[in-house]
Structure formats: structure tokens, C-alpha cells
Image 1 (cartoon, rainbow, N blue to C red):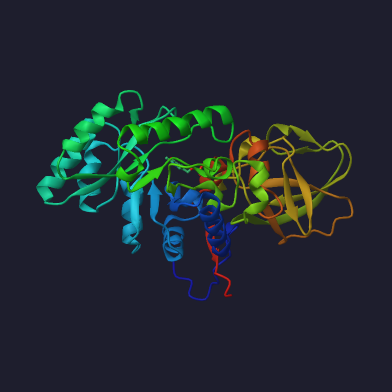
Image 2 (cartoon, helix red, strand yellow; image 1 turned 90 degrees about the vertical axis):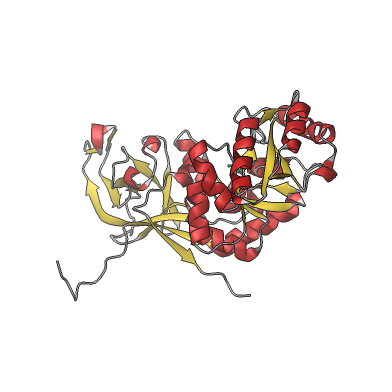
Length: 374
Ligand SMILES: *Cc1c(COP(=O)(O)O)cnc(C)c1O
């Protein structure tokens, strides 16, 4: 169909991403940790857009970008990013040739994995930098701290690999202080057992909660994810971070429904009196969580918060307005952002902020606010 003169409609739902705020949060992570930074950009930079965020962070200077898999690493390279890229989890066989070819840095969880990487590197005539992963309590990957010396001795004998770093991961840094200190101490004593800090160019175990809650020694690289995107896993540090993403939509309809009228599927909400109701053009098909239905979540329209009523549908939600409201069709609605914290929405949805951010679907347009010039 050819419609030469038809205008292009704006999106129904969109996110605004403030890259200047991202850079401020990066500076804060640097200051709070006193370390080099591996900016974690897995899962499309937590829904913020893998390529744009990776380019922005490279421009601001980071030591590494951290990703979940080679597919993400490939997209970053193809976007022209030259920074070091680190794989945060174990790899499987079919991924390893490309990892070596692109000189991506894996962490090593087993001797077999190391030997296979070495064989590929040898064949290609290169030396691959790797980090040894230590499981100090996360239970997801790495060598167990107990008995790691033997494995390390074997790793040192494998040619074509350079063990340039040592890594671990905190399981409970926003929940359990005592256990977190046990992990930190276990990491420090593992580094000592394996020859001391000077044997590893990079030593790292802190995620956002680790950076904020546990200033500590024996590490020189930190791996912030969530805090770069403006959300603190430890609420008391929230005021130190700048909001990066806002999820927005618009009012599509405003009506007054009579008393006793059901709102949305299942009629879980029925008006008690004549009620002014706005319909908004966003739903779970955009990643706005259906689980908040009936839980008291609010949206922000024209300077005030208003409750979501009835169930979230795929493309639309309903919002209760005051009787005298002057809210009209076309008004902008903030679903989360400066006024509605993601953490609050996550709590209403019985989940965590990480999941809300990464659940925003491709239908939602990402728009980037340019860096403020100083
Ligand atoms: C996701 C991840 C991080 C970042 O965690 P945040 O809590 O978002 O800061 C750091 N390290 C590893 C290994 C990860 O998988």
C-alpha cells in the first residue's frame, strides 16, 4: 500500500532514556567502588537498548562491558564498540570458536572449558585472556573455593590462555549482610591461596548491591548493572542515583461510568458510585505487568498520581480520576520514572525492578534524551 501523504503516528507507548543520568550514575559507581568498571549491559542493557547504551558507556570510559552471551557481544561489536567485553556466565561448545575469534573474555568454570578454549586459541595462533570464576556461594558457576588450588595449577599449565582475572558473584548482597561478608572473605582468602592479588590484573565480585553496601579491599573491578540504570537494590542509596528510564503512554479516552459498572476482564472492579475513568494505551503486551491488577499501583498524569483499577489488559489499562478532573484524551501518562519509582511498581507486581525493566517489549519505542551540554 502506498500512502505518500499519510503522516506517521506517534507510538502508543514509549520509554524515554536519559543518557546524561546514566553517565552520572556511572560516575557515582566509580566513586562508590573506587574501582575500574565493568558496566553490565546484558539483556539489551536491562531493556535500555544494547547498542546505544554500550556506545554511550564506551564514550564515558569503562574498563569492560559485561554481557550474558556471544550474541550480545556480537551486536555490540557490530555497533562499532571496541571496549573489552566479558561473558558473565559459562559458555557452551558451539559458542567458543566465535568467542575466541572476536577476542571476547570468558570466565572459566571448568578445566574442560579451559582446554577447549585453549585448543581453539592454539589453532588460531592467539592467546586468549580469561578470568577464573570462583563459586563463593552463588551456586551458578565457577570452581568451588574448596580445593581450587589444584584446578588453578592445571589452568596455569594450559598454554594459549592467560589468566588475567579472578571473579565471583554475590548471591544476597541486598538481603543478607552476614552471608555477604562470608562470600567476600572467602573470595579474599581464595585470591591469597592462589598467589595473592598481584597475580591477577582484575579481581571482581561486586554487583550494584555489593558496591553500595560493602566497601572492601581485594578487588579492583566492579560490575554494576541496576545502579547504572538509576535503581538502587538497597533503598537507602536511592537518593544518590538519577532516574534513567521513564515508561510513558497517553490517555485515549475519558468517561464517567455509572455506579455498579464493571471495569475490565472478570469485573474484579465494580464502580460504587458514578466514577470518572481514563483509558490509557498501554498493557501487558508492552511489558506493563499484569500482576499489578488490583494491587493499588498508580500512574502519574498532569502532576498527580491516580490508581489503576481493574485488570491490566494486553493493550489498555483503566485509571480512576477525581470527579472534577480536567484530564483529557491525549494527556501524557507516566507508568514509571521520576514520579513512580520502578521499585514500587515491582513491589505491586510481586517481582523485582530488574524484571520490570527487561520485560518491556519491542513494541515500545525507545527514545534517547541527548546528553546535556555543560
Ligand atoms: C547481572 C550481573 C551483575 C549486575 O548485577 P546488578 O545487581 O544489576 O548490579 C553483576 N555480575 C554478574 C555476574 C551478573 O550476572
